[in-house]
Image 1 (cartoon, helix red, strand yellow):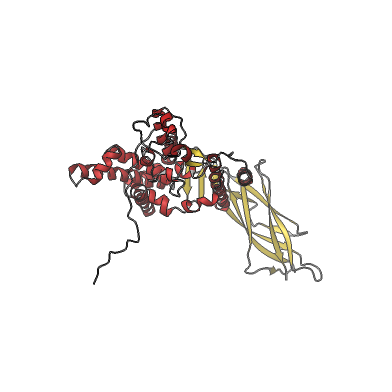
Image 2 (cartoon, one colour; image 1 turned 120 degrees about the horizontal axis):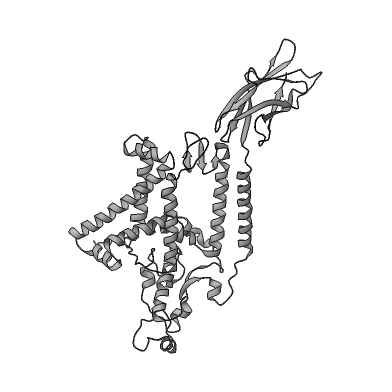
Length: 470
């Protein structure tokens, strides 16, 4: 009986050891990374003076059911702002992708930002690309254990700081930090911190480019947003290959004139663009879904062109139309449409946030019983008014009704509804009205009016309700 070789259904991952590179896109990436890390790690510790409430600039106060963003306070009834913001982010992604490809992935994505730091740590401890490859291939010894152990220890340190900093957004950071390290923090704080620590370590340290290639759906549907005018990282095959293909620098192929005379392109086949790629692809093979458009291969190729004293741009951000000698069109129906939609959504959200009411109220009718008929024949309905004070100052409201002629409003012994800053208050009221003559309607609409008594800068609000009769 003949033996058959087992069929491998999945290809094994080939480890990638990106080489360092210097250039304008690498500097841009470091700048964005530094800004993003400064905001993420330092923002929970930024103090912010408020008349009432916590003095933390950004705080997600779940027990208090409100979010603090500097001077903006988001209440549960304002949660639709989040849906609005997500819609803006989605259309912004479509807009940017249609113009400049996957620049979000290459410069702003959390996976990219943290992976860059993890690669930098690996390079710091283990050395440049050849040294890391050599260390991975050598047998286990003291050097390998020490360097790999220190690398993973530093990775875990960054991962812990990532999870810990995220947790600090959900409570007063100084107090929560003390409670965390003294074992007095709630379980949710430890669970959140160590869960994010584990995912950061795995995603940025172990999985790396596999997250972008296999886990992130963006790499799969990005092509639906590309067209011939989209700026992507591209290799100029006509210039790089010539008519005789690419070739290394050799005798008779050292100058550009010599190469052009023999039909050889400007690409010297050094492989630098492949070595610096965090996804491990060869940009010379054309557009590939693994490419995150980080521009590092552009820096690599430009540095080689500078050494050869040849023009830059063999690898560059360009469009398919430009490579074919046509003009790149940025102002198209698609981009203009996305731009206008973004402007409308953003402007509407800003207006909605700026014009938010300083307080709101709801009225619920007490339906057990729905109405009561008094001894004099009049009908009484009961209502519960809930007022929410969104400001940082006390609020006093006078309650009245409109739209129900000759009706009487009974507020009990409470003439003014007092609402503390950032709090809500309830008031039980009764509306008494004569029964309509004849066969009048059994339901009549009217309006509650809540009027601030000591705040001239706040307008009254109205809440519609309904009066029921037999």
